[in-house]
Length: 372
Image (cartoon, rainbow, N blue to C red; front, side, top):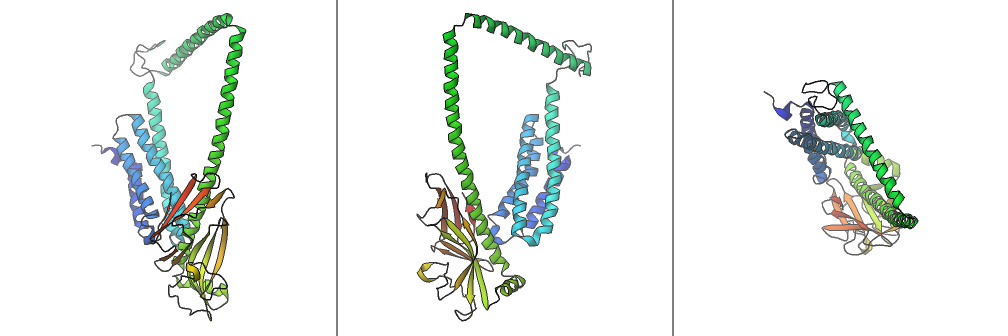
């Protein structure tokens, strides 16, 4: 007896893949429980679930719709695995194997969707019985029947076109020159209006793309600082950085500084130098003036800038509310220090011309980063 969707090989592989996603995400840092871990698990469950629901639907169009949702979830996982591979290099080998398995599932889903589409087309073909030009009385049309059908349809279409042409000629004969000029004027006005709308929307669309791009850049730098801080807990990473510095220094964490006045942001190391401060990190990272981001003249420490970034000239950081100025990730958990000192802070990127056109990034004291 058939088990329905459970007999589908693509469903079986998708279910196995989902279990593997759950197992590998258990190895992600706890800070990703509401981030990549949640996203990957949700999307992986979506694939076998939508295949199962689609197979239980009575009509091919409904089945195709659910299979397409499963296919979209697979594309979402492809992107998330690429991000996970960059964030967690120690899991690269396992992630590559998962990518190969996902590629196989996506190919099988694609074939399944195409086969359902083909069935829908074939279902609409007429039967041989009572078929125009048919020589067969069988329930299923022959190739000759199908050919005759399309010839018959084509002839009907040509006949209707010729009839419309004659009607148009008669109407044109009755038309005056003034009516033609009015039609031309209307077309010109419509063309001008449509062109204006397209130009306006192209400018708006470009601004949205720039906002999305710079928002993604800030999120990437925040995640990079968090990842580097976690890596500091590994002895080999600390020794390598220590040798590169060629000085008695201890790296206590990684952070991001937001320069709201100049539209810039920096990835920096929070350092402790010998002679300037005890080399043991004490998590007392609040510098003079309440800023975590130090300066060379600061007696308590010096934060070395790793990399500098800038927003698009058309954008700026909003300075209202609990806007984040500095954040430092301190290994091993990591512990989060923020300015302002709050449970949650925001980074708001706004259009200089239209401030209602903006994107927001939220960071909480658990290190969770959310783009809105």
